[in-house]
Amino acid sequence: MLKLERIALAAAMSLLVGSTAWAASDPEDEALRAELEMLKSKISRIESQINQGGATTTAADGSSVPSIGLPSGLAGVTMSGFVSAGMMYNFNEPKSRTNTLRVFDNRSNEFMFHNVEVAFEKLATEDSRGGFRGDLDFGSDSEVTGSVTTGLGSTTDELDIQQAYVQYLAPVGNGLDIKFGKVGTLHGAEVLEPAGNWNYSRSFMYGYAEPLSHTGVRASYAWSDMLTTHVGLHNGWDIVDDNNRAKSVDLGVAIVPLEGVSIASAYTIGAEQASDSHDLRHFWSLVLGYDPTEVLHFKLAADVGFEKDAVNENEGGNATWNGIAAYARYDVTDWYSIAGRVEVFNDNDNTRTGAAIPAGVANADLQLIGWTLTNEFRLAPNLITRLEYRLDQADSHVFPMRSGLESYQNTVGAEVTYVF
Image (cartoon, rainbow, N blue to C red; front, side, top):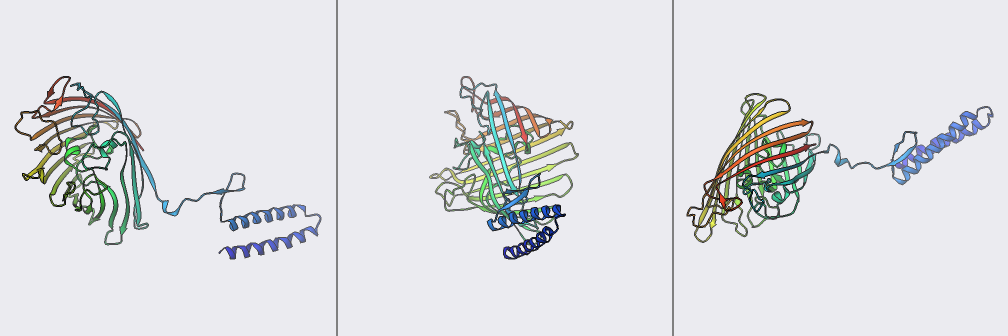
């Protein structure tokens, strides 16, 4: 192509040179002569740029200036994210200034910079079957979500890659969506992004019953507008590097049987204990959604977990946990909503929460009940503010006070989130 362009340019220049000579023979046609000289100069610059392989764009004055073209693989890439901050006051006034058994709102009487997230995504489509997504998070929330070890809250790193995967939409039937990398979990009714939840604080189930992310491969297939299924193979719960030789398997289904009704269920099985590839963990979750009107919304979530020999390897003690949560939200106006959540979480043998059960208590099982009422104000486009009251109760004295322990914890909090 460059050779053909050079030949064409050379021919054009020859023609112009001849035309210039003809114009010079006519002393009265000075304007035409000047115009031809200008065209010769422009063609010379274009030929130089072709030889150098440079790209140009046209400035306001008509001149050509160098420019940098974006890679073709970035076509269709979108950016989104949020910035979130908040504060939670604990009426127990614990000396540790810690809200016991909370997830992200775990600091008492302290302003918290929760998270700033920037996500880049290119969706795989029938016209462009390759895609990707990357979510970079920074803030105190990343101390919880950081997936460098098993378990939650075990790192002080405030930087985390929440998701990072490559996507391929295989030309199979309606399209087989394959994601390879780190992906969010299929379990639970709540998510990391504040705008995706109805309350400021996260539930006990979100923090202690369910996984947050998986690293591996997941395939999803939409059989129709009503039915989607998922299957995945990954390293385990909330880890990037595998902690044993076994892999975990995900199975999920999402059903929309009627308008305003949704059903999502997922099951995960795999060995999750470090250096133990035999003792399996089973986990099942169910989320039901019902929107009777455009302004009234309900959700019901249930979790059931079982892990072999997780309590005591030598004595063969198995761990079990389960929970249920009911949610309701009413959009009073276009700028104000009120939402409530009631949950019960049972941590049998205290394996999930690791709460400090007082000495002398015979039963190590722990039951937690949470009551949450959240007011949401949308004061400006993309700006979400929340004011929340929450009461936590336990069947044992696990919540610190100014002195001693109590079986309850009262908090009030405020959150501000900007979504883009």
